[in-house]
Structure formats: C-alpha cells, structure tokens
Image (cartoon, rainbow, N blue to C red; front, side, top):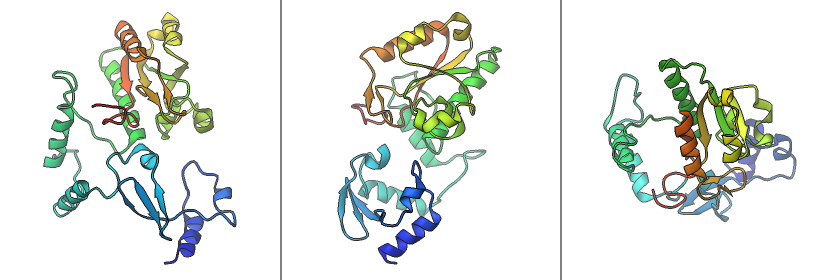
Length: 250
C-alpha cells in the first residue's frame, strides 16, 4: 500500500490523541507514516530518518528493535500471549515481580500489582488508597491532593488529578474529589478539616513532564513525605515518566 493510500485511510478512520482532527485531516497535511525503528531512530515509509527525541512519549527506554527485548517477546509468544492474573499465575509475572521488588530497599515495597498503562496505574493507586481508608474505618478520608500543572493520565479519575487546564478543565467534575495546590507550602497551609479528609497525595517525583519538564525544588519530596507522615495521608508517586532510571539511578 502506498504512503498516500495509508494517509487517506488514516484520515478516514483514525482518531489521534491530543489532536485537532480538523487540522490533521485538512488537505495538504501529510502526516508521517512510520514504518520501522532502530535504536533511537525512526524511518517513515518514504525512507526518511528521524530521531525519536522523546522516546515515543517517554515509553521506549531501551530503544526500538532491541535484540534482547525482541527475542524475549518472540520466545514468550511461542508459549502463551496472555493469561489472566485473576485466579491464575504464571512464571514471567512472578519473576518480574521479584525483580521489581529487588530494586527497592528490604522491607519496603514487597508486592507488585500489574496494570495496563499509566492512567490505569494511577486509577488503581487511588482506588487502593480509598479502599485502605474504608477498611480502616475512616471513610471520611476520600479526597486527594494533586499539584498544579500535574499530568497523571487521561481516564476519568486520572484526569481529575491533572492540573493542566488545556487537557483537564472539561473533566474537573469527573473522577475523584481532588484539591489542587501549587507547592508544599500551600499543602502545609490546608485547614485541618481538609487535612483529615485526605486519602492520598499524588505527585510526579522530581519532574513534571507534560508541564514542560518542570523540576521540583531540592528537598520537596522529603517535605512531602514528612507531611504525609504527620497527617496519615498516603503518598502516591506517579513514576510513569520518571521511573526505571529515566532520571538517574534506580
């Protein structure tokens, strides 16, 4: 199929994320049709090469077409593509959970819960926090604190945590009950009645990615940890962008 044929089918049938489709489908707009990747590079169907400068939106840590990763995927597909963790378990899931736990200091993180993507991970973390307080007999802890300019995903609950107006303003009334603050000082100044209603605090550690790579001040996370210890609120780190060595060591 030619590149022009692919572009025509794309404009007829694909709805792209964060895209004004009127502009995308306008005559004269010829989107790149990516055909393959190798390392940090992408090639389109016309043979042009491009540097994948944001690692395909922060997800491709090890580069495209990595031989070790590709071989592991092929090997697993020869055995089984998918098996639910509901009522079953399997060796790859067990081994990966153990490897992830081993990245943390002893007696800290001891269990892993798998999800599909970043938005789902944040939804699950918030649901776990709500369930935790309900089981402890404190259902009044039903609110979350998130930060201005935050990005935590685009499903209903994750979007309600977000602090970027262009992405999230239309969805303020969906999802979780969220208090947005600018920084740790604003958090400390929350009145007592609100403090006692907070189930958890969500933050992107070190860097707010979608906000423009905004760095938190040094010591911010320590202050946040101390505040959560004082108030009992659970601290939720959204490391979809910053985790797994992207900002330094594990």
